[in-house]
Image (cartoon, rainbow, N blue to C red):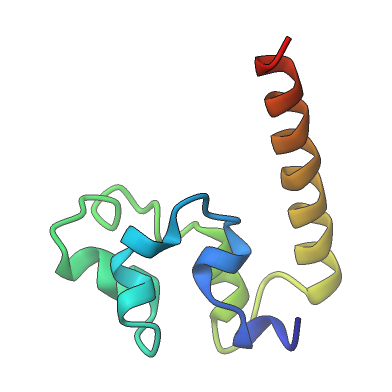
Length: 88
């Protein structure tokens, strides 16, 4: 992976089904703008404003590469643990 600002939202969020995502269909536009254009209420609830993707992609990011790697590592480990538990 390159610079955090080069990553797509579906890569940062580890989306399970990015093919159906409006943001993937329009990757040159920030996903939070795409969400508001596609009738999503997430922006009204400030979900997008507080989202890790936006925190990473802001002009002066509030999250460093190292912090993002840690977040992604924890999310990946949690996801694997949930899948293992579901298969018991």
